[in-house]
Length: 490
Image (cartoon, rainbow, N blue to C red; front, side, top):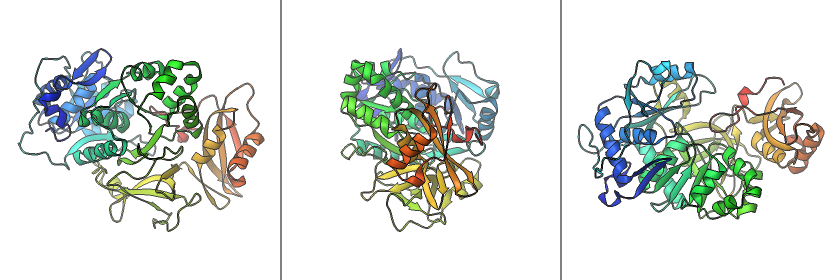
């Protein structure tokens, strides 16, 4: 079942590097052998869970399951007890794949444990065969990835094999991503970004992945300086790189020599875009996707790396903006904010055990309701302004995206981090609230100064009416600000 990973069946690639996780380094031949052995042990299971630590065992576990035609359910090792218990009960995995010696929490106590062996055995890359023979069904489930559950219990998005292939092939075309590229990243492996793009992407193309285990600017500089040429990261990682650049000439050289720097999973602040570009001459490109759709848009390697945008739709993806009634926007421009809807072969099959949620997620015609708000630029570039539920602020008759206000505030020297929300206001409908982490907590900027700063850069109606200072912003594992966790009412 090497429909997803043709390089694993190619004897000519057997000696080429495939994966590196610290001391564990696997060639394509070694990876194929380890994945095939695992696949034989789990063949026929309805689903298997994968304890998704940043290790070679996780990568081999997922690849082995996919080769055997068994859907994999990546589990976040940092999940709380109740969340993990819900996911295990909902997905009902027959086995859980783990690295040897791993201690598992109580929620997995009743699931058969399978330890993943990644030690080389000298096998040639022979593919595992599907139990019934023939070609795998492109609609067959490949992964069940659980959403973050910000509006209730996490839902399991069933990602079919055709969605993986479609997204990875579209990104390869957009980024001229080939077998010659060596990717480095330190992303977690229980999300689409780190697992699908960051592990399965290189293996589909025949390239190499070097995983940092734990992200550090020093690790990035080391690997980019030792032959890696592509970096994937999230905004918090690029912020740390931007902060380190002034005092780290080795990091400057490493980033300057990279072929491709990609940020995703949340919007990269314009200020960090500009700091990295000024120091290295390299522009970070962004892409946009989500668990249910995989990747929808990306700034192309031969396109303009425009800060604050996520590029045009990928090949095969249809994208439109709709108003509150669900009707497509007839006009586009900087003030024409609409919800993104997409359709294409990149979409998921539905939510596991939730036909009601699946039906509610789609509009007529097969359009998936993303819940993300954006404006569409004249050349087709998409500029996301935030989530419909938390980032679209209706104030004084205007629809305002939180993202542009956040970028404006980050240009003020007194602001280190910021999140913008709306809260009820008797006069305006909603007033704009800025949650600020000050660059100098002992001398934060005045609220009026910040409001005037935004009004001068954007427009008076976009200025924050309330400013609240925090020591830190609440964030999830990918560094996204959890706005629902901000204290209500100050």
